[in-house]
Image 1 (cartoon, rainbow, N blue to C red):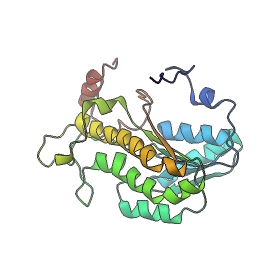
Image 2: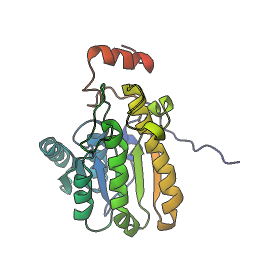
Image 3: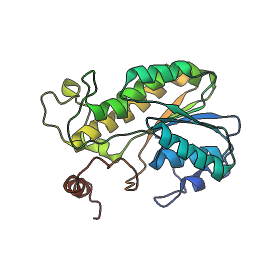
Length: 243
């Protein structure tokens, strides 16, 4: 029987503390959704450790501001900003096609949690499209780059919200079910976990290891920006978050 992996870190540990003593010189990383919140902090910490970091963002201007701040704070000028709209598979394909050379770290961080039902132009529920399908296509498109890195890592940023819903394959886009943000976000986060499991199972032969992580509840991100005060109150109640 295997033993759980232990860690000296806890809920109050910072990303800087976790990466202390690790050198990423010569490594190349992509962080999606890095124009704010967890993604921006992750990109900064990777850059501080010496990695070349690409901020894959929908809002290019916001990404540029974050990149400038990272360069200022870390002294690492190998920080790039590249447009990426995960709801648009054409944008995902263009990003993957433009990437050259090895990729050592891919962090699928970008997320969306919508209070109302919305669709992409191709008819896919938008939360699922951004949180999972876009990242799925991006990871597949970058497989050769990950393989050539010899020991690449893929990290899917999931959530404890995955406990609220399985992936309902018969109705992923809520054509028949009543939509709620908890169910929509929950099944997308479950898909993140399943993708990590499947990637490691299928790509270990290429030296690629994938993990899904839950960062805990971080209220200072842009994830909740679409919720009304009433919806935000209901969300906090569902997850027992103090008001």
